[in-house]
Length: 380
Image (cartoon, rainbow, N blue to C red; front, side, top):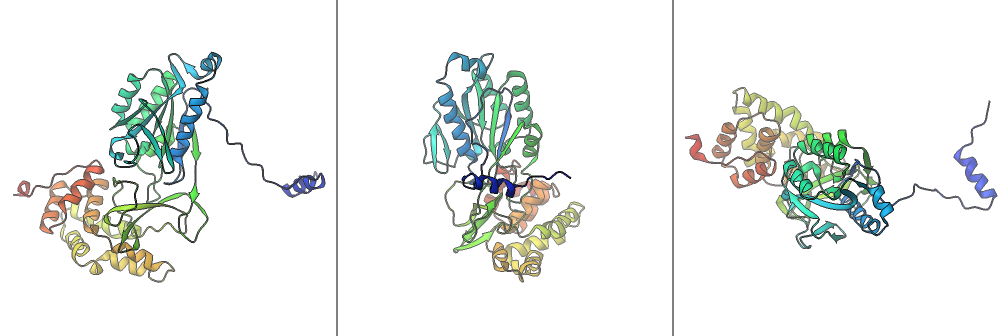
């Protein structure tokens, strides 16, 4: 039977020739602008360097533009040249990096200036307008593509196939719940030609493992309070560290230190209550929302967390998830905007009956593309 050489055999052979034993990794190469029609996903948790990778593509393009006409023939399809790069951000992401210039492609440790080759858009129609207005641009970097409508995936696919454009997407594919972010993220995976995964160190102070997940938490009275599973999917805010209940903080975390309380409660209790209310039996949901707002320790949520986590090593951390405000408002937003289980009329009635925070709910629902104007007169 033939003998198969193992890695250990190779290491011993190198040592016998006087070479050190080393691990040789794949080369980190300059970006390839010669291939038309690529749709490249840069994925990883917050802080993993997705936008910084995009900035490196921008710098590589600046070097490649200095090459000869022969190179231009390799990087061009018709009028467009893939060395000509344009950077796009979402309008709802405008509060991040406010300390940088308007034309900056910003990341956590710096930025590059894009000049006129930068825009903020609202949706996929805005992307089409940018593409039409820039016929010589061959590469579009679209930051946080998951923030856009799902039509974006088809716009990108069609332009890449028909025109030879290249698209690069530094984006979250998984949300803080460790679920696929939304239908746009799922479609981006379907149409991608390349996926480049990036990781970060786990940002827990006692850990050096690789982080694959984005962890959301609130800082209340100096305590780390993990976001509950039914926390709003999108919360627009800046990149600075925040205290209080209005805006969360984010960190890259590994499996062990990614705390996500309330998932069982969401599916075993909250959703069934919403379904029951949708069928006309509103009282059980009303009672739970009232408890979440005014006496949270009596709520089914508090009882579930106490039973599920109190005996665990990090039990106190999980129970801290009850400390932030607006838990009742978040539960209703989840049932209305994500699960479509309760009507707008019922939503407004519960909000006004229980005197919940209308301003918080209006902003949250608007950020999550389900705007509601709370007007008590509409219920009369």
